[in-house]
Image 1 (cartoon, rainbow, N blue to C red):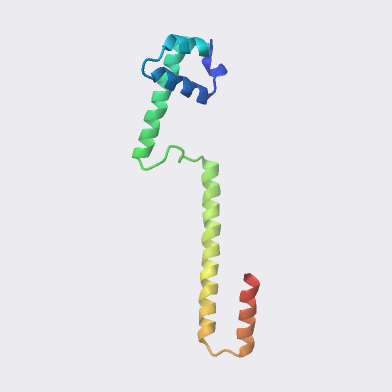
Image 2: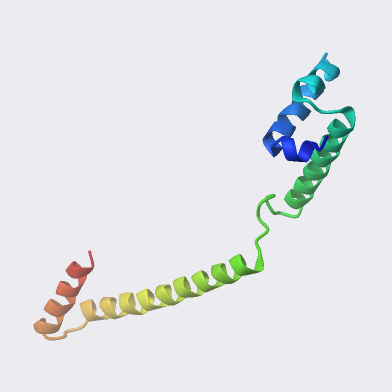
Length: 121
């Protein structure tokens, strides 16, 4: 019987936890799930491998799901670049606005800048 085709990952983990309980009747649990002892041993090995891998990832300062693929990495780099450019533009605009408030420019320019600020809200 191929347990991988019959049970979801969550059900396998539930089975694993159930068999680990104190005074658990492993034989009864296996019958209820319809699997053999060898299937349970495969599940136990998989749980151990996953736990060790998750702990290794955390030790290196990463959460278990922190690894991203090349495509997702490229998208994140592109998004970061866009945000950095937008931030630079905002800094320039902010600096110009601060300078215009301190200068003695004609009232028409100040009115224009004030109108521009209200449009952005």
